[in-house]
Length: 77
Image (cartoon, rainbow, N blue to C red):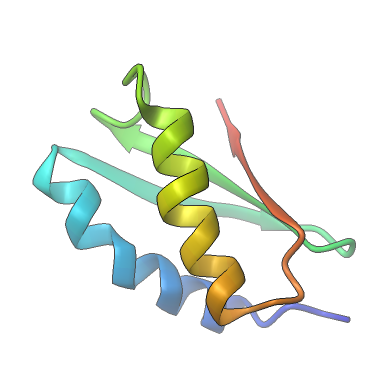
């Protein structure tokens, strides 16, 4: 099943204010055919020791809640 890029961008926009509170941001990089969303963490999120927690508990959880066909979210460098 093809994942709608605009829906992914909309969900990322919904979590973006929380990231920006800590000087961070997120950018969509790619959506694979097997349901993996690849993002790039920006700003303070890029090298934050809590970035994996932010990725899993924040970004991934929000995306999967809204778009259940997403399998997981991965950060690229």
